[in-house]
Image 1 (tube, helix red, strand yellow):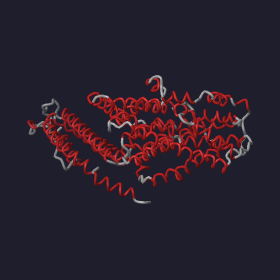
Image 2 (cartoon, helix red, strand yellow):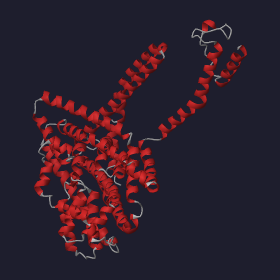
Image 3 (tube, helix red, strand yellow):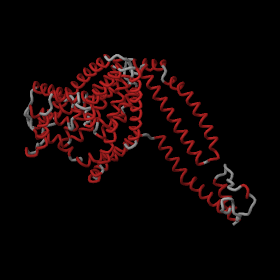
Image 4 (cartoon, one colour):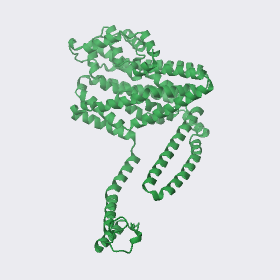
Length: 554
């Protein structure tokens, strides 16, 4: 046994030359290897255990932990979302049956995000309106400017869709299905008759706030939150302060909840893409490839010809905006759901430089009034139906269709399959073939990804534009909000470090006192430096410098 013990001493010394062998029983240091130690085992058994532990640590656990640390350092959530996209497409193409079965994984992600939408919109809008000043007229002025901007942009989107439809003529040469297969399209046309001006008004003014929340009526939620915020402004200071504290806490907790749900995003996004490709297949591109290519080309042209000039005219940093839009755009594109990207879009715009009051008002309102991608799709799709039926529409009729779509497309975000319903009503009104709409329904899932992502990007751009118009883009109000947000994030990191130190101390009692003492000192130092660091990184001087750089003519 003495030889065995000596052998393991040499092996342990060779594997860890920088650290002397740990003596597990100093009192029995000079005893024979077979003499039991204080833990009841002989020294040779303790050394074998130590050797096995070092073998595990050096050969197995250490390489794995280092690899995992490098992955965490080199990758982030956006990387895993990007990685899930080709994986989902490949799974849907090669295993369509399996892809259809995993669709609930994608639906679960969208549902989890929708849980956060109502409390997030309500709390942020109340804090944004009632938390900064007592002038209610500012809300009305902001609303008027926002609606005017939305109307201008959606008109440009409709015009671009008409121009693209007349240039590429996606409906020529398309074989229409028999009239007997138009049941779904006819049902949508009947539903379009139910949409009236009073119905859309009651979408804005709900009978019950909770009913509007359950039915995802975005305009109703915004209306109730705005009324509640105006009432809070008129209330006494004590009541207002209490409600602001409650709503601010609700906002912070909801954003933390969104951060937790986003860890599931790669799985949900991959499953959504796999089910979309598995259900539609690639063969659908053969007959309607010209239409699909035309819609996506129009979306790209709209981004280059409208969004980019707006960014330059209003002196919004192009690179910073695109980086801020990375995750929201990916989520909207891969899930075909604007609501799933709403929390992340609001968070990114707050970080980018828009104050909370404008973010919480403009983005939710844009979900009903600023559907740029949807309006491009509807105008191009209406002309496609006419071309597929061999009908030549004069320019006056096309302009009339554009006006009809512009008036009826408001508020469709609250209606399931709203774009298809509006298009069905327009097609029926102008006596266009309903069979062409049936073909559009077959590729709606593929087209929905592109138009939804442009919808989200357009709403975020509108938020930045309104911030510039109001003079609050990266201004003093946003600077105070950002300092407070970063301060809270730094304090959260300190609390997590303290919890980790406490956990280590519970495992190693002998070092508990030193760990707590060190952590206490470190926490005091960090808390003292937080405000200094925040004001250095977001100081008025640096903000003015950044604004001057942003204001330079392109």
